[in-house]
Length: 313
Image (cartoon, rainbow, N blue to C red):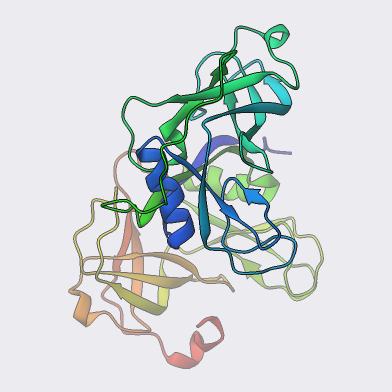
């Protein structure tokens, strides 16, 4: 059995969200070194504030200031901080019930070790030197044995309110394509395309999946396909993607390689975008050191008849 491949992969993108009036006031307050909560109909104060009561589902909009000092209600030690966490040295995750609040705020506590933190200890906010209206404006919590922090008297109204935030989303993981796709990737290194044939319906799937999606039976018979194929359908891309050095407009399409019963996707080049059409016969173009075709270009053959690829559109 060939070696099954694996490789580290990262999925990362900026997530942009708008803020309602409650979250807008909360984050703007942090920028101004003010902690705001929201009061429920029965008099509880929730921090962080939410727009709806988690118990009654009532709309909530009465903002109230709470202190920047409070009490640890529970904690857990983090002995090995990860990328993007608030501190780069070991710290404690803590739930802090701020003075004047009825709920816990999750953040980090900067202490030298787990022996230095306990439930019931008094702490206060350590503000970030530069603040922009984000939860990271609270750099962390720190031990505090003094009196509770004084309130500023804020009513939650500020100039230049924060109306939206951009939060980076990232997933680091190790991906293994499995036996079937490992064979497909290894063949690409030799500039070949291989699929697998279903022993029941005899369809050839490229890229192979290790099982037939129609019959549900395992596939193992390798079949070399292509390299030429037929463009079954396509779209014209007019918006330039970040980190992709391709000038717009360009064409991206589904290509049914000769001998395959499943179309794969690829970029179409070597032809003006407004001359691309369904049924166009294409072939792969490789670059030096490329692990897969850079794009597909017209072969110069007559267009394929629609009936020969209509099942793959």
